Image 1 (cartoon, rainbow, N blue to C red):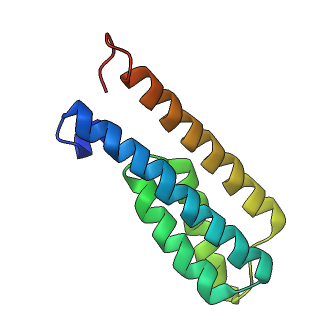
Image 2: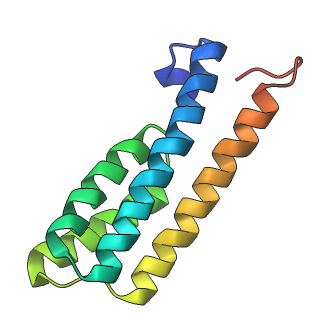
Length: 113
């Protein structure tokens, strides 16, 4: 996914991956804080921000969970349950690990981003 967004430029792709890891990590930390605080407005905002970052990575499972969390908030105005958030945390960790592995492979001379 990143390569397409980088117009098939491996250097731009590597920068995009690095930026994603930084930004998505920060966004998830803010989302986690908002959920723990029970702040529905901040949680909704961070869900949307994180979803935007995840779209470029192709993390459809995590996006689906965020959509569900966001829909629950808008319907019930309650912070998400621990089970749903645990699922999201797992998907985010897997996505970030995939991006780190992709970036590591792309830095090898024979590999392409």
